[in-house]
Length: 99
Ligand SMILES: [Zn+2]
Image 1: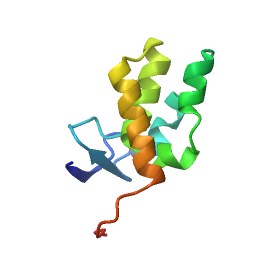
Image 2: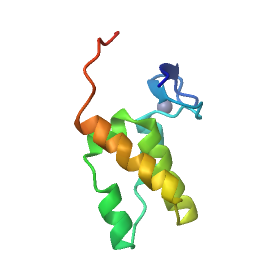
Image 3: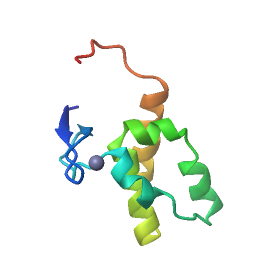
C-alpha cells in the first residue's frame, strides 16, 4: 500500500501520514475536536474504543471516526477497513522505516 507524508492542510505545521488513496491531510491536533463527539451506539462505541495513540498515528482512523460522528453511520466496508487498520497498528509489519 502506498503511504507518504504530507503537510497538514490546516495548520501547515505538522506532517500527516497518508495511507492509500489521497485524503485531505489533517494532523491529529487539528482534527482532535472533530473526534470528541458522543457515540451512543454500543457497537460503534466498542469499535472506536482504541488507544488514542492510534488516532494520532492514523489519519484514516480519524477520518472514519469523524465521518461517523458527522453522518451517524458507516458502511460495512468502512467498519472492516477500520478494524484492519487497527490490527495493523497493533501488529505493525516489519519493514525498514524511513525518517
Ligand atoms: Zn494541523
